[in-house]
Image (cartoon, rainbow, N blue to C red; front, side, top):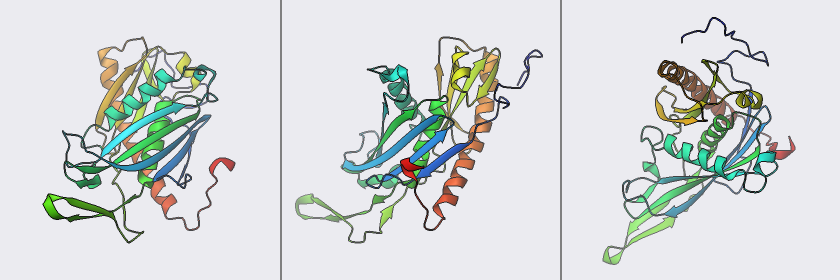
Length: 278
C-alpha cells in the first residue's frame, strides 16, 4: 500500500491500522435455537440465533436450502436507535450479509435440501444488536458465522408414497443431526478511510472522523465475495485496489482464527455457558 509520509501508523488506543481489538465469543447459549452465538468487541455486543423451518426452495436453486437474515437494533444499544432510528442500519447490515452469502463458494446450502424443488430447510438468522460501540458490521458477521457453526438441524427421512406423493418424517434418532460446513462462510472486513489510508476495526470515535468506508466480505481463502461502499466520501482508485488487497489478507486471517477458536471451544468438555450473567 502506498504510504503517506505525513501519516504515522499509530492510533489513539495504541493499535496500528491493521490491528483488531480482542473479541469475546460464546456459542450455544440460546437453548431453543438451532444455533446461537454472542460476540463482544470492546463495547459492541451482538447476539445471533438461528431458527430452522421447513419451506420451499428458491426457483433458481431448487436443490439447495435457504438463508434469510433479519437484524433488530435494540433501543438500548445506542441513542440513535430510539424510535425507528435503527431501521436503516438494520436493513443495511441484512443486505450486506445477503450479498456476502449469495456466492455459491461462500456456503454450500445443498445439504439443506429435503425434496428437490419442493421442500428444504430455511435457516432464519436473527441478529440482535445489544450495544453499538464501533465496527458493527465485522462483529455481526463473525457472530453469524459462529452461530451457523453451532447450528444443528434434524435430519429427515424421505420416502415415496402413492400417487407420486413424498412423505417426510423426523428421524427416530435424536442424535441424527445435520451440520453445515462453514469454513468458507465469509466474514466482513470494514476498511475505514482516514485521510488517504485505510484502517480496520474502527472505534466509534474513528468512525465519526471518517466520511467513507468499504465493507468487504472475505472467505477463509481470501476470496472477496462482495463489496459495499458506505458514507458520502469517495475513494481514489489506487486506494480501492490497495484496500481490497488489505481486506483479502486480513479477512483470511480473521476467518481462520475464528474457525480455530470455535473448534477449540467445541472440544471443551462440561463447558460452562455464562450467557448474560458473565
